[in-house]
Length: 127
Image (cartoon, rainbow, N blue to C red; front, side, top):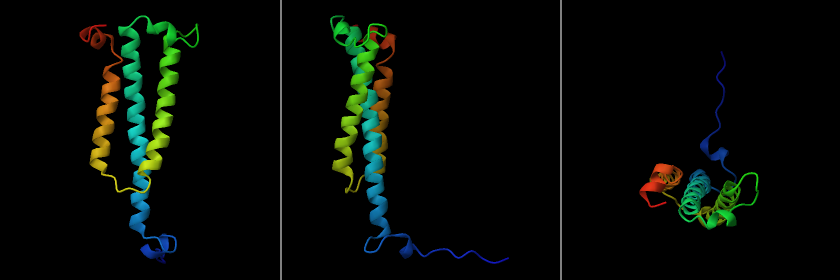
């Protein structure tokens, strides 16, 4: 059986670009995606808590009467996520980003947003 030739590491990268540079840039964008996702989840949790805590905000967050304040919370969280992603993608695209710190921050933000969507937590925090 004939062996399949494998390309050398130098042929896998475009001319003038080292393979390590491509991988760093790729993770910088991935880090922006992860951090923005965590930000979006945390923003949704914070908005959910605020609307439950302050009843006067319910009307302001109601974009659709059939859905109620959930329509505003999700819309504003998605807008925040997209804006955060755009800003972080520009900032982190050419930077050396620590994977461990990125995963940690993203995990904390997702956990915060997740916890703030539960009614028992609202009651603990005074809602």
